[in-house]
Image (cartoon, rainbow, N blue to C red; front, side, top):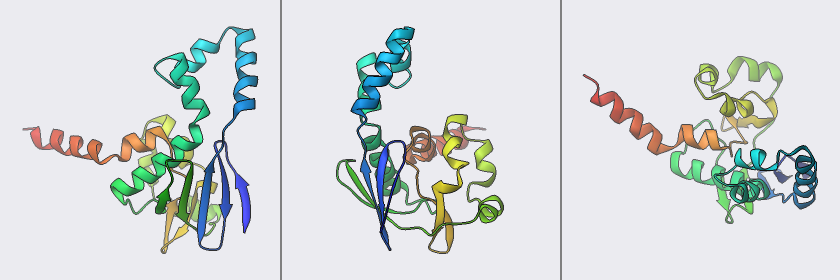
Length: 172
């Protein structure tokens, strides 16, 4: 068993499963708030994360829960073969995924499952797609293990694909 962490979650890696726990950054949020308040940037920064400053603060505070929930619902709704399956989520507080085996930089470079798609997605969505540590071998394929991101959810949403299909079929 191994413990790791990312920007928004603590991760326990076992032999067959990965358990992701949402991290809450109360101290970090307070520190950033003070730093941004001194510079007069609080409102502007919070509006980057939500429709209002209070919604932005909640989004930042609950970023780990949101990432967990997005991974769970994206897997549940798509079963996309480019993602490692997310088996369970407890309201985004805890996620359980299958464990993927690490891959090398050469494997990632030569066999990235997203290939040219990286150039089609919005720039904010490709940040995670370009990181080796976000991929692993699972079920004989290279798959994305960290896909809890707004842009990923928007792009791979079944509703988006339905809308693209409807637009394509409506063209003369």
